[in-house]
Image (tube, rainbow, N blue to C red; front, side, top):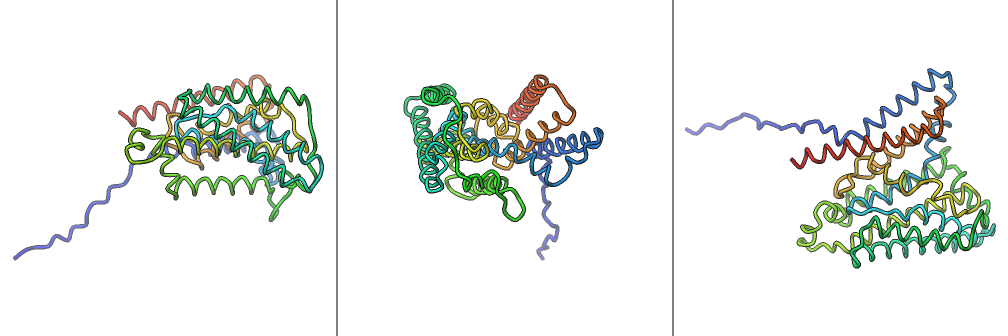
Length: 330
């Protein structure tokens, strides 16, 4: 007589992945530092909801840019032209609007077309001419900045009051810019997580040769990622134009949006080699940057020392993920 084993199969639990949860843990650490600094210095007024929303609001443009940069880095590329493109889109939109509400839509459309063209050119130079992404996008940045500086030296044009809703309006009691940012982040997350396009982005970044053998057009994916990255930079430029009520040729470069967007993405766990990472990590990276900046301001750290400490944080984060990546491969 046969016997039937009633033993239940063992369920293997996945080991805790510190690398996976590192962005959340870093964000928790930043929150704790911020709260402790507010309490110790007696500046508890910065713990109100309005002030916390203001902390996030100061980094909206950086967060939007970093979302686009995430797509570029996921395909093992990078984009240094975003800062100049932010300036160009801010100037273009404010000049076209020139305070006229009827020109808001044409200005936005023109700015988005500019972003799509720049992203397309970046992608084609990288994929067709085989130029290193760092050099290709740096060259594009210099071209944009040179053309911009030839025509504009200071604030140019103005945006109508209606367009200022982007930076100063509110919906359901929350700043519209913040709501827009998290909405954009959710859209990017959905694309990367639940669409075929998103799967192909990861495949191309993880192993381009295997992706090519699987029938995926690596050229198409890299170009698409750069177009998305440039369009996000344009949106950030539009946000800054709304916030400043005008455009200027230096707002992108002075904001260091090229380097800081890369740093935010890396701190969020997306590796520069491509193929691993995600949007919510980038969102966490943006929040970490914003909270750390506010922490430094509360304890009144010198501006130059603050830059040094931010650099140390970035290098430490990159080193951590690099070591973890090598261990994973080993």
